[in-house]
Length: 200
Image (cartoon, rainbow, N blue to C red; front, side, top):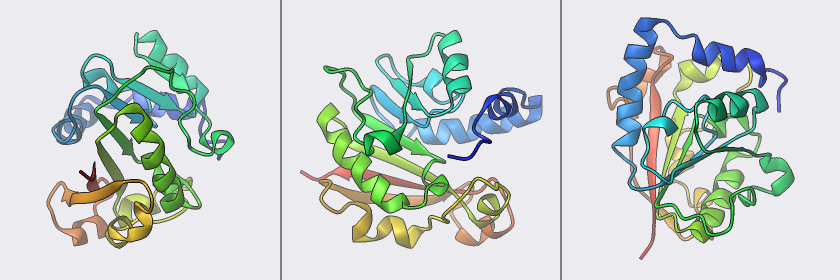
């Protein structure tokens, strides 16, 4: 992973202006409304969403400085290297159960995002997960971050490759804010939200 994932990232995320924090609440509310019950926050960052989730929720994060920050806040967050673990979620303690999982602004940092998503979906089933929210940036948001590797679009998330062999299927997808893809061509904080559910 890029060296940018260090203390600088943690400081950037925790030193938002008052206006940015206010606007950020709308995004957190949107994500939270699509989740239910104890949730696994994969790539939880500084814990903004995790801190609002129900009891029993847990975060996994690659950035050690960010993990330390979250733990200081009393959040249940574990350090996790998916590359070493083949994305099998082995860092989660045995007996942990979740209803939902969120993978927010993670896939675009990877060289093989659909392969990783498929592995995560399959692994999440072992912990009872039945609903998964995936969030990725639009084109403008993708362009402004040098750590982004692959532009994940709606066609990729709707393809069979995204869920192959996982037992999950795409339930719905939308753009936020404003359900119009073209907004993401110029507005850097526009994102695509996709919900996958475990097939009955």
